[in-house]
Length: 362
Image (tube, rainbow, N blue to C red; front, side):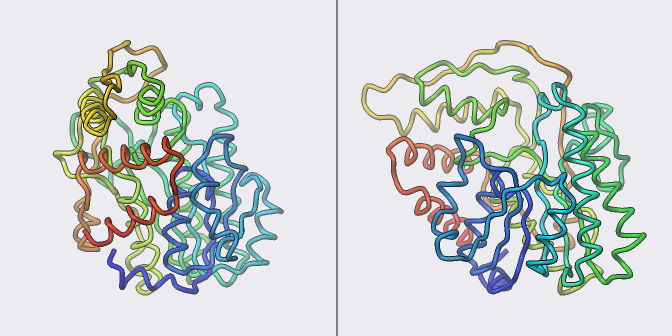
């Protein structure tokens, strides 16, 4: 997405679910810079969260209205939708952690499946909505570990409760499109993105947040499944693609569909390789006398997770002329740069603005 295309969002009313999460916080900063009128609908941010650092000025100047509520509460969601009358809707509210889904499967399904039902139903009763994007995951596909990249036309059937619930979310969306939303004139897409990294992710059981915590504490990083392959990319890669799709289908509804969003093939690396590169980036920026960061393999200590995930993104390339902007090393360098600012108690909004501008320039 170019700066000129981003101007589409100036003054536009957009509802973002999950705005207090990691992706949502970065998206709120991007939309604030674009001049959008954002209503966020989400649970309260975690105690340690990027959101308060990223959204303070936007809340203060009125460009972002934060509604703290549960996506499972249909009546509240509908009331917010009908009060704010958004033209654009971007759905990111979810229980997003695989290991948590094993611990809390019912909550995962309630949030990821019924949350999607609630939002689709609220859109059905909100005439202002013209473009809707449901963000799912690369894990929605039936994964038989073939060692091949997944295409959008392949079967959906996630193994674990998180992945399966996101597959169900896709199916719910498709049903609402066919049954209600097409005739209402709402353009609807789903976006299946790979693993994201970047400054400000404090989630548990994610490899880069775990690595950042170990680095800041001066400890050795503990890595499970170091040979698993994942499509890692900087968080701004999918976010700008979400905005590209949301804009494009609002202008040309025939562009609505399902799209994979992932890195170049060369950036689909093993978890062990990723952490090695993170250590190198961290050590290059360390102060004199700082302990060198290293990692160790602790083996697979948890429930089943796919060992190979890779996306065929040719459809997005062909449809939108899209390609990734930052490679994996640049993504890690920017993650480390953000973390060093955070460590020093620096201006997080200014650092995020710098990274967003650099991404757009690239």
